[in-house]
Length: 229
Image 1 (tube, rainbow, N blue to C red):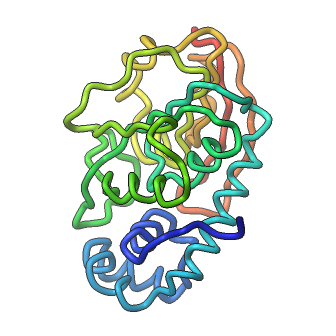
Image 2: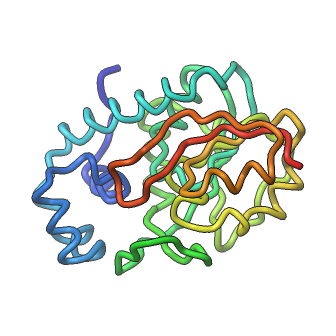
């Protein structure tokens, strides 16, 4: 597989979630005009679906390889804020693991830069995410999405919890803290990007730094944590 099967609507959503998929010119237009205008109008005409599909696959493959050492077959996995879910799709296909996804199901009309205490911002569509998984050969046996605003979250124990560029990168970890206490086992591994990695040394007994980002708006570290204190 060199690229994902992806339609134009899903490609539009992908570039909304991962701005590295588009050119610097389009990124600047997105900042100037805002997310809503970009998603509703400009991205309909100014992106190449095949090119976005290939770029998105390579990007998700890179993310998969970055965390692969923590993954094994048949794990139960929770993903928070995955976007359309390219990483999770690769995990499901390669490892036959079941993925539960907690997601927003709307697109904010304005870009909110900075760190959000309330997690009000959203840019996803669960119907497109569902179609993306099905189109790329992942059956409902291996994934289920939960709407952050309307659904009860899954309460089973998970082996892995993943939240790349979402939890504690754009919004406060504490929004999920009580929920996580219910579903974490001592050996559950949480993998996420954070702008305040030192804070989590107070919460977890074990922390690995997987990746560092110093050239982005949010300077961050990707960490793997387990054994919540």
